[in-house]
Amino acid sequence: MELTLNHRKEGDRTVLEVGGEVDVYTAPKLREKLVELVGEGHYQIVVDMTKVEFLDSTGLGVLVGGLKRVRSHDGSLSLVCNQERILKIFRITGLTKVFPIHDSLDEALQDSE
Amino acid sequence: MTDVELHLPPDVRYVGLARLVVMVAARQAGMADERLEDLKIAVSEATTNAINAHRRTAKPAPVVLAFGPTGSGQFAVTIADTGPGFEPPPLEAHSSRDWSLENGLGVTLIRGLADDVEFRREAGMVVKMRFSVDLTGDGAVGD
Image 1 (cartoon, rainbow over the protein chains, first blue to last red):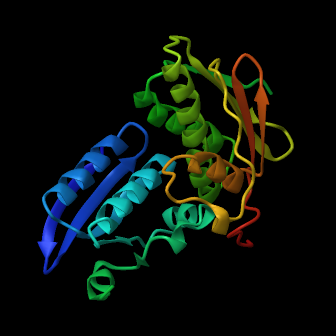
Image 2: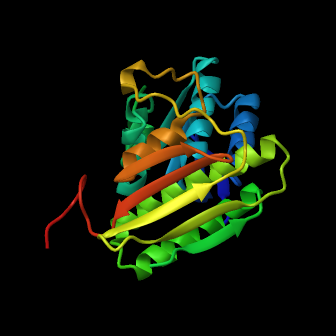
């Protein structure tokens, strides 16, 4: 399955909806999109991973890269993820301590961090 | 039982194919859905590392996956490359990890998801992972 990327503004946040499979083959597209968004001045990013079918460490690395990018502009990058199989890899790698992870987009948008 | 072998061109576009083929074989061996998810990620990680090892050396040789049930309730996957190999990073506490590194999470995931894993240096790096077919360990549920 291909990777799909769509973004929109929600108040002062930018929601990036990611769908499909994020692996070594498709992750460069996600990296490019995050670089592009930050380059355009989107520093408060919510990555909605509700429709992600597969994510491995290459995808995790890209998200960490995105987080570093927005932080260098005093921004934030939070995640929406309610799938146990994906949350599990954030837990194993200790990244649950690095990213704010929300069950729903509403919750992410209400978070004032 | 004789393992099935899959020879993959060293191109990252084939990592998804490797995941799919190994997952179907494991499902046929009776692996529970939750374990299939663990297997898919671990296979993706090891195959990505192997293909990247070949790409770094511009070797056209294929990456070889061999997989099948072990006969003792496990499903084994061996992924071999002929690249220069890598030193698997030492086990470390999450708190000590340097998050400025965007790479190196793959081996952590393999270790966290497989029942056991061995890294062996032969012509290149050989990674052998075993997964219980039934639900065991984290998140296991009784019948």
